[in-house]
Length: 432
Ligand SMILES: CC(=O)CC(=O)SCCNC(=O)CCNC(=O)[C@H](O)C(C)(C)COP(=O)(O)OP(=O)(O)OC[C@H]1O[C@@H](n2cnc3c(N)ncnc32)[C@H](O)[C@@H]1OP(=O)(O)O
Image (cartoon, protein in one colour):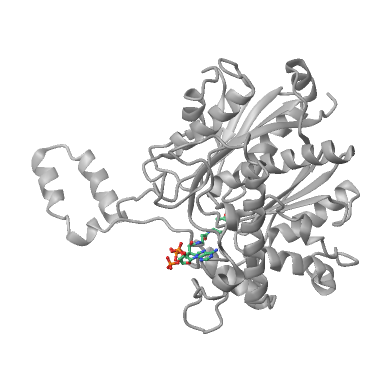
């Protein structure tokens, strides 16, 4: 057996994130992913290089886009001999691609690779409806003109209605927001607490920009130099005035456009490498990807768990394996699908009953220092192009650890937690 090797995160690049139907309305997933990959290639001088692999993915993909990672890699300046493949695990996609690339590095199968992700809510794939699809396929098989004409006579105006994609869960028919409304009601999370978390998401993002944190992480694209969802002028006064976005009828809806992620376009990528490869090229890893854990919950059975609660299950397993407590972290990167979902997860870790009965723990995991959470902004403020958010978080977390080390002279540790559609969650620990 070869020894397991450390996985270095050398750094990342992303394009600024843009709200749906704004600056990137004409950009495809491949265009945006190419820009993010090129950002990494330029920053680390990888032009013409053959890497071990590129793994990326998108949640919303056109059927013509079979392998967007390969197409983007071919246009990125990397050697055409670099293998590339797509992965899709909803919002956790590009954290999972980093775990996959990192695992191959740890096992000695590759020395270096890029993990990334992308999504376009503006260029969402629209398909023809099922009846028309079947008719077109039958037409293609028709042998004679008269046979095809006979088939065409079956065409009805109703068959022209397109099939528009949404982020609804297949098994429940509910949207992510509707599921999260159920969760915040179960956990009694107040509207005020959600708005306060949303405000912190914007404020932390704005401060990070002011301090130049994003200067070397962003590659301008489509005329944009910073995330266009970030609001310096938002406030509790403005947030409390917004109307419920998902529970429109009960009078108790608390999720709004202000405390939910906006539909977003964007792409992000990170470079991962073995210690030896990094040293050979004169790069010092900003952080190490120490471990990762996935979980899934049953959100539709007789006793359904909250759709976005899987990270609550993954984190205690990750902590136990690494001999850590929830408090042993300098920073927490908790993906904000909705402010309310972050607060449900934190409440779950604080609850003795839940930790005992649902997570099978002897004691609650306890509280975290909220001032260490999403210190450079979260998904509510920066935006959330589904497939790209994991790589956005990884690149920011690794850079934050390198700044922490430079400032304090000691290494630090970050917990990453991402919920995903389908009742999934992926979590990871970085050190550096
Ligand atoms: C998918 C996975 O695997 C896991 C996950 O991450 S789950 C999460 C997936 N993401 C989602 O489901 C996306 C959820 N978001 C949405 O569907 C939509 O953004 C939404 C329905 C919540 C809102 O859509 P919308 O109404 O079109 O938003 P938008 O028009 O931008 O905003 C509404 C108003 O709020 C205002 N607003 C928004 N944020 C604000 C803020 N922070 N401060 C002040 N005002 C704000 C806007 O200015 C706008 O005001 P006007 O009407 O006066 O122009």
